[in-house]
View 1 (cartoon, rainbow, N blue to C red):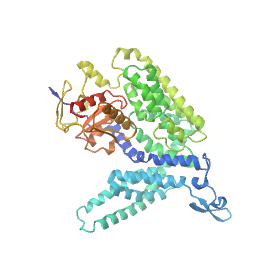
View 2: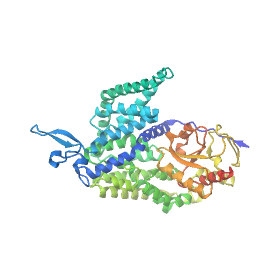
View 3: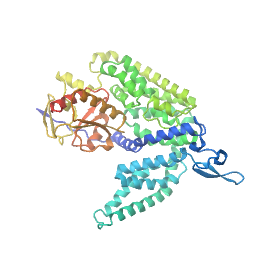
View 4: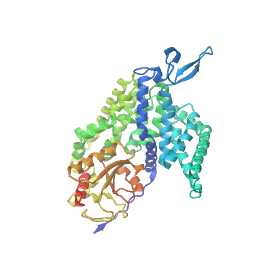
Amino acid sequence: MTTTSTPKKPGGARVGVQRFGTFLSGMVMPNIAAFIAWGLITAFFIATGWFPNGILGGFGNADLIGWQGAATALAQADDGTTFPQYVGLVGPMITYLLPLLIANTGGRMIYGERGGVVASIATMGVIVGSAIPMFIGAMIMGPLAAWLMKQVDRIWDGKIKAGFEMLVNNFSAGILGAILAIGGFFGIAPIVTALSSFLEGIVDWLVANSLLPIASIFIEPGKILFLNNAINHGVLTPLGVQQSEETGKSILFLLEANPGPGLGILLAFCFFGIGLAKASAPGAVIIQFFGGIHEIYFPYVLMKPMLVLAAIGGGMAGVATNVAFNTGLRAPASPGSIIAVLIQTAPDSYFGVILSVIVAAAVSFGISAIILRASRKRDLENENAGDLSAAVAATEAAKGKKSSVLGNLSAGSAAAGADVVDEGVVTTLERGPIRNIVFACDAGMGSSAMGASVLRNKIKKAGIDEITVTNKAIANLADDVDLVITQRELTERAKEKTPSAVHMSVDNFMNSPKYDEVVELLRGEGAH
């Protein structure tokens, strides 16, 4: 008997916000190395840095220091005397380099290299049209400019006479880029400046009234629903960078990146969890706290939704501690590892930042322990309660046998041609054997890279060759793969990108029982 299922239609506000967050992270995450470089240069060389250096940090009078070869700008003293001042690296990087990288990446996502070039040209108008770093402006103008270039090219697509292609292409891009740069200067820059001032005013009001911890009520549940990219890259990072330029640090970098809440939840599972959840928690602690992959604890909370209270409580406690000690980071900590957090911590904030992580972990641990202990008796009576793949376990318990991988694949796929019978045995596989497996997540880095590594090692130990296992961002998926593995919350969006692939949803990238089923399937297909 062949069973089929109708895939859920993607939609809803949550999926829309996820998709928006994925697009934002697609612009920011590839350039995180540049943010880290800027943060390190800032931490070392500004006037209040670890090793102040006017030439690199961009402060001081070049005449007084006596180094005339460095890049300088003219400044005017009170008596009207003009003298050179160092420009340094910090200012130009945050003002020009970082926004242009974001704009170029966004443009490439829309229209390849041509879109990236036009996006960079247009974003220059936004940058010079404002006195604040134009990260939000770059996120708006970059994709918009590339999309407009794409529409313009469609006007004369296939109508250009041979020999004139380069002339038309170069001039059309140059003219449109110039027009958009001017439009960005007079249009988008003032709007984004006003928006940034409004958002900054809200943050300042929350800080002044000691209400910033309430932000965790929205941030922590948003993270668990994979909306963290929209929150972090859409709001917190742009505002945090602006604050850091003005004051040398920003607490906003710690609102989402603090590893304490997730650490406390995972530690509670180490002591009070049961089944697979307890067994896998110690490894998850290391990956979350030192590796900075916060997604690792999301399935634990989704398995027992009451634990969102622990995440909120830990987040609020951590933020309150940072507010009390006036702490902050110089630049975004990405990934959210304790190592990355400490590297980016401002020199006067180490005690407060470390204490905020400890307090956040302690509070989330305490709340999690109460919740887990209160439900322990009921969970012990339910043999599947500690299984991170509850749906799989329930199916196996009902059938009395192990489920195969295709019993859990998203059946999107009539296009994939996979028929699944009620015993979980594959009867037809018209798409051909699996040779290309991709793990996909929002950013295509942390959690998906971890999952790909785990499965790759299992395949290697099984002596199977000729199988490619990679990781990508969902936005970068192409419909040329055989099997796509995603976390359950993200599967619907992955289907849109790869409708002809077989899809598998997992609860935990680190330790899913379905990986063994994938290995057995590959063996059954004759992979060697």
